[in-house]
Amino acid sequence: MADSSVNASTLADGAPDPETVWDQLKKVYDPEIPVNIVDLGLVYSMDIEKIEEAEGGYRVNVAMTLTAPGCGMGPAIAEDAKTKILLVPGVTSAEVRITWEPAWNQSMISEEGKMKLGLI
Image: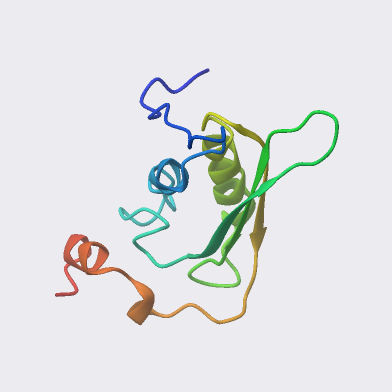
């Protein structure tokens, strides 16, 4: 099912707009926390690379963590992120990798996230 709320912008060379990818990541939530994974500080990196193979297009690579190593929702959250990234025009492949380094802590939460959680 297509998400019609994806901003259909690409860069002049056809590459996906990084802001559009970040906007999609902001639509991903841990089901137990009412703040998206970007504002929670769970996304450590996002990069876009051109695929040089025959099919072309662009791959988005994301490294993210979870609030706790024992979080059973990790695979579901990563898959949700991947699904949303693949909706971005120009993206033909996505990989969302869960890492534990560095360990997540509350100081990584954005100001907006802290306000939503009542931490400030």
